[in-house]
Length: 289
Image (cartoon, rainbow, N blue to C red; front, side, top):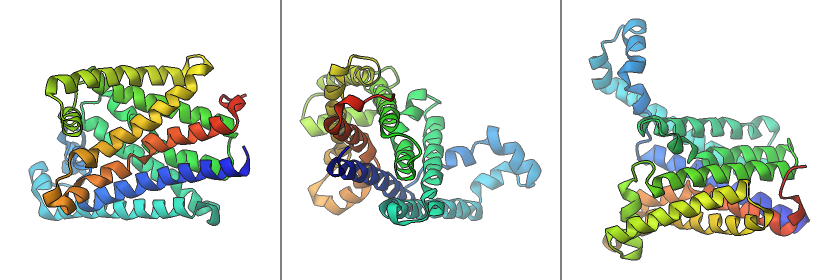
């Protein structure tokens, strides 16, 4: 890969990583990530709380002091994600001990994905839908630390894109209960009826499945169209969050409540874009050797 493409490739992966970290930081500062799904699970933590700490469960879940500590932890995680975003921004100028924060940040994002997975009845699609989000810091770390060949990195990115889009397709298609937000975003964005919105989502699910299969299994001629689809559809589904929920009369509140969801989805279209850049620069090395 020549210098021009190599620099663009790096910049795109770095921006994806910064976006997911800072978008999640925004969520931690102002909204409510699902840590209480774990911390208020009596079946899982009831024995620990009551036997180890001697606190009755009802007192634990209603204590304002304990809730304040949980909220402090959430805020500190937000600070941590801001720091991880800064590491990503200046990653080439930092010592390896700080660069390794990217892996700790990826671990935090995986924990967050696991909490959403728990909250959504352990649907595997919910967990793997976040593959690009917790994978982006790992890709950046591998690229900067030169721990693998670029061709193998591309292969890992293809797997992450395929898994993320296939998992998203399971919800759009209706294999899992389709979130109401999916339908409402289509209605708000396109101005169509609910029945047509659901039909469009089913077709989008099929396209997600086709793109995932093309990235991993189909002949090489399918790869570039699949990557282009993932770039475009990844951007549209991310941008639909602020677009469909924007109200001019409350523009500041609308942006505050929804833009962060677009920002932490940067990897959904930027990682496919990085694959596109690689394919354009050296088409013969799209697979590991």
